[in-house]
Image (cartoon, rainbow, N blue to C red; front, side):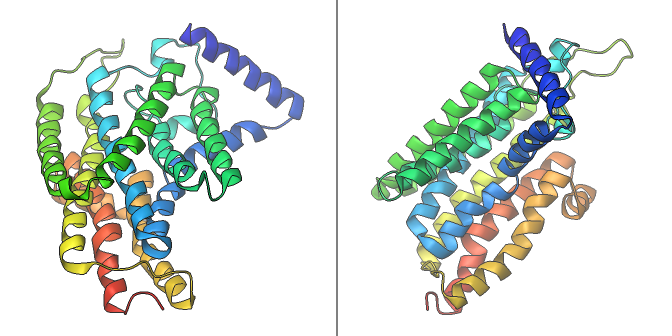
Length: 320
Protein backbone atom coordinates (compact mmCIF):
# COMPACT_ATOMS: atom_id res chain seq x y z
CA UNK A 1 0.00 0.00 0.00
CA UNK A 2 2.83 2.39 0.91
CA UNK A 3 4.72 1.77 -2.29
CA UNK A 4 1.55 1.99 -4.41
CA UNK A 5 0.81 5.42 -2.93
CA UNK A 6 4.37 6.67 -3.48
CA UNK A 7 4.37 5.34 -7.05
CA UNK A 8 1.06 7.12 -7.69
CA UNK A 9 2.58 10.36 -6.36
CA UNK A 10 5.65 9.75 -8.51
CA UNK A 11 3.45 9.43 -11.62
CA UNK A 12 1.53 12.54 -10.55
CA UNK A 13 4.81 14.43 -10.12
CA UNK A 14 5.91 13.42 -13.62
CA UNK A 15 2.56 14.49 -15.08
CA UNK A 16 2.69 17.88 -13.33
CA UNK A 17 6.25 18.49 -14.51
CA UNK A 18 5.30 17.56 -18.07
CA UNK A 19 2.23 19.83 -18.00
CA UNK A 20 4.10 22.80 -16.55
CA UNK A 21 7.28 22.21 -18.50
CA UNK A 22 9.27 22.69 -15.29
CA UNK A 23 9.95 21.16 -11.89
CA UNK A 24 8.52 24.15 -10.01
CA UNK A 25 6.24 22.11 -7.76
CA UNK A 26 8.99 19.65 -6.81
CA UNK A 27 11.38 22.54 -6.16
CA UNK A 28 8.75 24.20 -3.93
CA UNK A 29 8.39 21.05 -1.84
CA UNK A 30 12.17 20.57 -1.72
CA UNK A 31 12.61 24.12 -0.40
CA UNK A 32 9.77 23.66 2.10
CA UNK A 33 11.44 20.49 3.39
CA UNK A 34 14.84 22.16 3.58
CA UNK A 35 13.33 25.12 5.44
CA UNK A 36 12.11 22.69 8.12
CA UNK A 37 15.66 21.68 9.09
CA UNK A 38 17.38 25.03 8.53
CA UNK A 39 15.63 28.36 8.93
CA UNK A 40 12.65 27.08 10.93
CA UNK A 41 14.81 26.48 14.00
CA UNK A 42 15.53 30.22 14.10
CA UNK A 43 11.90 31.00 14.97
CA UNK A 44 11.89 29.58 18.55
CA UNK A 45 15.18 31.37 19.24
CA UNK A 46 13.80 34.63 17.82
CA UNK A 47 10.77 34.33 20.11
CA UNK A 48 12.95 33.42 23.11
CA UNK A 49 15.46 36.26 22.66
CA UNK A 50 13.27 39.07 21.41
CA UNK A 51 9.53 38.48 21.81
CA UNK A 52 8.47 36.39 24.81
CA UNK A 53 10.88 34.33 26.87
CA UNK A 54 8.23 31.92 28.18
CA UNK A 55 6.77 31.25 24.73
CA UNK A 56 10.24 30.79 23.27
CA UNK A 57 11.15 28.32 26.00
CA UNK A 58 7.95 26.40 25.25
CA UNK A 59 8.90 26.13 21.55
CA UNK A 60 12.49 25.14 22.35
CA UNK A 61 11.36 22.51 24.87
CA UNK A 62 8.90 21.11 22.32
CA UNK A 63 11.70 20.78 19.77
CA UNK A 64 14.10 19.24 22.29
CA UNK A 65 11.61 16.53 23.24
CA UNK A 66 10.82 15.87 19.57
CA UNK A 67 14.54 15.53 18.68
CA UNK A 68 14.89 12.95 21.45
CA UNK A 69 11.84 10.97 20.30
CA UNK A 70 12.99 11.00 16.68
CA UNK A 71 16.43 9.57 17.38
CA UNK A 72 15.14 6.90 19.74
CA UNK A 73 12.31 5.69 17.49
CA UNK A 74 14.38 5.86 14.29
CA UNK A 75 17.19 3.76 15.76
CA UNK A 76 14.69 1.31 17.22
CA UNK A 77 12.61 0.75 14.09
CA UNK A 78 15.58 0.73 11.64
CA UNK A 79 13.15 1.01 8.72
CA UNK A 80 14.72 1.29 5.29
CA UNK A 81 14.02 4.16 2.90
CA UNK A 82 11.37 3.70 0.18
CA UNK A 83 13.90 3.39 -2.68
CA UNK A 84 15.67 0.60 -0.78
CA UNK A 85 12.41 -1.25 -0.25
CA UNK A 86 11.29 -0.74 -3.87
CA UNK A 87 13.72 0.14 -6.65
CA UNK A 88 10.87 1.71 -8.66
CA UNK A 89 10.79 4.65 -6.23
CA UNK A 90 12.93 7.49 -7.61
CA UNK A 91 13.14 10.52 -5.25
CA UNK A 92 12.75 13.95 -6.82
CA UNK A 93 15.65 16.30 -7.45
CA UNK A 94 18.15 16.64 -4.62
CA UNK A 95 15.79 15.28 -1.94
CA UNK A 96 18.04 12.28 -1.28
CA UNK A 97 20.89 14.55 -0.15
CA UNK A 98 19.09 15.25 3.15
CA UNK A 99 17.40 11.86 3.38
CA UNK A 100 19.93 9.17 4.14
CA UNK A 101 19.76 6.17 6.41
CA UNK A 102 16.68 4.97 8.25
CA UNK A 103 13.25 6.22 7.32
CA UNK A 104 10.81 5.90 10.24
CA UNK A 105 9.75 8.41 11.52
CA UNK A 106 10.36 11.44 9.31
CA UNK A 107 13.00 13.72 10.81
CA UNK A 108 11.94 16.75 8.74
CA UNK A 109 8.39 16.30 9.99
CA UNK A 110 9.56 15.98 13.58
CA UNK A 111 11.69 19.13 13.28
CA UNK A 112 8.76 21.12 11.89
CA UNK A 113 5.83 19.77 13.94
CA UNK A 114 6.93 21.23 17.31
CA UNK A 115 7.51 24.68 15.79
CA UNK A 116 4.46 24.94 13.56
CA UNK A 117 2.31 23.08 16.11
CA UNK A 118 3.66 25.13 19.03
CA UNK A 119 3.12 28.42 17.16
CA UNK A 120 -0.44 27.33 16.35
CA UNK A 121 -1.09 26.67 20.05
CA UNK A 122 0.41 30.03 21.07
CA UNK A 123 -1.49 32.08 18.48
CA UNK A 124 -4.82 30.26 18.11
CA UNK A 125 -6.68 32.93 20.14
CA UNK A 126 -4.60 36.04 19.36
CA UNK A 127 -4.07 35.39 15.65
CA UNK A 128 -6.25 32.50 14.43
CA UNK A 129 -5.37 33.08 10.77
CA UNK A 130 -1.67 32.76 11.55
CA UNK A 131 -2.41 29.60 13.56
CA UNK A 132 -4.23 28.17 10.52
CA UNK A 133 -1.26 29.05 8.32
CA UNK A 134 1.05 27.16 10.71
CA UNK A 135 -1.19 24.08 10.52
CA UNK A 136 -1.21 24.27 6.71
CA UNK A 137 2.59 24.57 6.60
CA UNK A 138 2.91 21.59 8.94
CA UNK A 139 0.67 19.45 6.73
CA UNK A 140 2.44 20.60 3.55
CA UNK A 141 5.85 19.80 5.05
CA UNK A 142 4.67 16.32 5.99
CA UNK A 143 3.15 15.78 2.54
CA UNK A 144 6.32 17.05 0.85
CA UNK A 145 8.26 14.08 2.20
CA UNK A 146 5.83 11.73 0.42
CA UNK A 147 5.66 13.81 -2.74
CA UNK A 148 9.45 13.84 -3.02
CA UNK A 149 9.54 10.06 -2.56
CA UNK A 150 11.77 9.97 0.52
CA UNK A 151 9.25 8.85 3.17
CA UNK A 152 6.23 6.58 3.43
CA UNK A 153 2.86 7.79 4.78
CA UNK A 154 3.54 6.05 8.11
CA UNK A 155 6.82 7.92 8.44
CA UNK A 156 5.18 11.32 8.22
CA UNK A 157 1.98 10.50 10.12
CA UNK A 158 3.90 9.13 13.09
CA UNK A 159 6.33 12.06 12.78
CA UNK A 160 3.46 14.53 13.10
CA UNK A 161 1.91 12.62 16.00
CA UNK A 162 5.19 12.43 17.94
CA UNK A 163 5.95 16.08 17.18
CA UNK A 164 2.56 17.20 18.50
CA UNK A 165 2.91 14.91 21.53
CA UNK A 166 6.16 16.77 22.20
CA UNK A 167 4.25 20.07 22.13
CA UNK A 168 1.72 18.70 24.63
CA UNK A 169 4.44 17.28 26.89
CA UNK A 170 6.38 20.57 26.86
CA UNK A 171 3.22 22.46 27.83
CA UNK A 172 2.62 20.09 30.77
CA UNK A 173 6.24 20.38 31.96
CA UNK A 174 6.24 24.19 31.86
CA UNK A 175 2.84 24.28 33.59
CA UNK A 176 4.51 22.66 36.66
CA UNK A 177 7.53 24.85 37.45
CA UNK A 178 7.82 23.34 40.92
CA UNK A 179 8.70 19.99 39.35
CA UNK A 180 11.17 21.39 36.82
CA UNK A 181 14.31 20.20 38.64
CA UNK A 182 12.97 16.65 38.89
CA UNK A 183 11.94 16.69 35.22
CA UNK A 184 15.39 17.95 34.15
CA UNK A 185 17.06 15.19 36.18
CA UNK A 186 14.83 12.61 34.49
CA UNK A 187 15.78 14.15 31.14
CA UNK A 188 19.50 13.79 31.89
CA UNK A 189 19.04 10.16 32.87
CA UNK A 190 17.05 9.48 29.69
CA UNK A 191 19.76 11.11 27.54
CA UNK A 192 22.47 8.90 29.08
CA UNK A 193 20.28 5.80 28.77
CA UNK A 194 19.49 6.62 25.14
CA UNK A 195 23.19 7.08 24.31
CA UNK A 196 24.00 3.65 25.71
CA UNK A 197 20.99 2.11 23.96
CA UNK A 198 21.93 3.57 20.56
CA UNK A 199 25.57 2.54 20.86
CA UNK A 200 25.05 -1.04 22.00
CA UNK A 201 21.74 -2.28 20.57
CA UNK A 202 21.91 -4.68 17.59
CA UNK A 203 21.20 -3.33 14.10
CA UNK A 204 20.23 -4.97 10.79
CA UNK A 205 23.32 -5.70 8.70
CA UNK A 206 21.94 -6.18 5.20
CA UNK A 207 24.28 -5.89 2.22
CA UNK A 208 23.90 -5.03 -1.45
CA UNK A 209 25.04 -7.40 -4.18
CA UNK A 210 28.30 -5.39 -4.30
CA UNK A 211 28.94 -6.10 -0.61
CA UNK A 212 28.04 -2.61 0.76
CA UNK A 213 25.80 -2.12 3.78
CA UNK A 214 22.35 -0.91 2.81
CA UNK A 215 22.48 1.39 5.84
CA UNK A 216 25.53 1.86 8.03
CA UNK A 217 24.24 1.99 11.64
CA UNK A 218 27.39 3.75 12.86
CA UNK A 219 26.80 6.59 10.40
CA UNK A 220 23.14 6.66 11.42
CA UNK A 221 24.17 7.45 15.01
CA UNK A 222 25.22 10.96 13.99
CA UNK A 223 21.67 12.31 13.90
CA UNK A 224 20.49 10.88 17.24
CA UNK A 225 23.72 11.97 18.93
CA UNK A 226 23.13 15.48 17.56
CA UNK A 227 19.60 15.45 18.98
CA UNK A 228 20.75 14.19 22.37
CA UNK A 229 23.38 16.94 22.48
CA UNK A 230 20.64 19.49 21.80
CA UNK A 231 18.39 18.14 24.56
CA UNK A 232 21.30 18.06 27.02
CA UNK A 233 22.08 21.70 26.20
CA UNK A 234 18.43 22.59 26.68
CA UNK A 235 18.44 21.03 30.16
CA UNK A 236 21.81 22.36 31.28
CA UNK A 237 21.34 25.78 29.67
CA UNK A 238 17.87 26.22 31.13
CA UNK A 239 19.13 25.33 34.61
CA UNK A 240 22.05 27.79 34.40
CA UNK A 241 19.97 30.59 32.87
CA UNK A 242 17.22 30.21 35.45
CA UNK A 243 19.62 30.26 38.40
CA UNK A 244 22.26 32.79 37.31
CA UNK A 245 21.05 34.92 34.39
CA UNK A 246 17.27 35.46 34.42
CA UNK A 247 17.35 37.61 31.30
CA UNK A 248 14.34 39.33 29.74
CA UNK A 249 13.45 39.22 26.05
CA UNK A 250 14.76 42.34 24.35
CA UNK A 251 11.66 43.40 22.46
CA UNK A 252 11.84 44.59 18.86
CA UNK A 253 13.30 48.04 19.41
CA UNK A 254 16.54 49.08 17.75
CA UNK A 255 18.68 47.57 20.51
CA UNK A 256 16.75 44.30 20.41
CA UNK A 257 17.10 43.99 16.65
CA UNK A 258 20.85 44.70 16.78
CA UNK A 259 21.35 42.08 19.52
CA UNK A 260 19.22 39.63 17.57
CA UNK A 261 21.22 40.05 14.36
CA UNK A 262 24.60 39.79 16.09
CA UNK A 263 23.50 36.74 18.10
CA UNK A 264 22.20 35.00 15.00
CA UNK A 265 25.53 35.16 13.14
CA UNK A 266 27.34 32.38 15.10
CA UNK A 267 24.03 30.58 15.53
CA UNK A 268 23.66 30.48 11.74
CA UNK A 269 27.06 28.78 11.33
CA UNK A 270 26.24 26.23 14.05
CA UNK A 271 22.88 25.32 12.49
CA UNK A 272 24.15 25.13 8.91
CA UNK A 273 27.23 23.16 9.90
CA UNK A 274 24.87 20.30 10.76
CA UNK A 275 22.84 20.61 7.56
CA UNK A 276 25.73 21.23 5.15
CA UNK A 277 28.46 19.27 7.02
CA UNK A 278 30.70 22.34 6.86
CA UNK A 279 33.82 23.62 8.63
CA UNK A 280 32.66 23.37 12.24
CA UNK A 281 31.48 19.76 12.08
CA UNK A 282 34.54 18.76 10.04
CA UNK A 283 36.85 20.39 12.60
CA UNK A 284 35.08 18.67 15.50
CA UNK A 285 35.15 15.35 13.63
CA UNK A 286 38.93 15.76 13.31
CA UNK A 287 39.22 15.85 17.11
CA UNK A 288 36.49 13.34 18.04
CA UNK A 289 34.75 10.39 16.47
CA UNK A 290 32.07 11.70 14.15
CA UNK A 291 29.06 10.81 16.31
CA UNK A 292 30.55 12.63 19.32
CA UNK A 293 31.36 15.58 17.06
CA UNK A 294 27.68 15.76 16.12
CA UNK A 295 26.70 15.59 19.78
CA UNK A 296 29.06 18.48 20.66
CA UNK A 297 27.71 20.50 17.72
CA UNK A 298 24.12 19.89 18.86
CA UNK A 299 25.03 20.94 22.40
CA UNK A 300 26.78 24.12 21.22
CA UNK A 301 23.86 25.08 18.96
CA UNK A 302 21.24 25.04 21.71
CA UNK A 303 23.56 26.17 24.52
CA UNK A 304 24.35 29.31 22.52
CA UNK A 305 20.64 29.99 22.07
CA UNK A 306 19.40 29.25 25.56
CA UNK A 307 22.31 30.42 27.75
CA UNK A 308 25.30 32.09 26.09
CA UNK A 309 23.52 34.84 24.15
CA UNK A 310 20.98 35.47 26.93
CA UNK A 311 24.03 36.22 29.12
CA UNK A 312 25.05 38.88 26.59
CA UNK A 313 21.51 40.27 26.51
CA UNK A 314 21.52 40.48 30.29
CA UNK A 315 24.94 42.18 30.40
CA UNK A 316 23.86 44.79 27.87
CA UNK A 317 20.92 45.81 30.02
CA UNK A 318 18.11 43.73 28.55
CA UNK A 319 15.01 45.41 27.11
CA UNK A 320 15.17 49.08 26.05
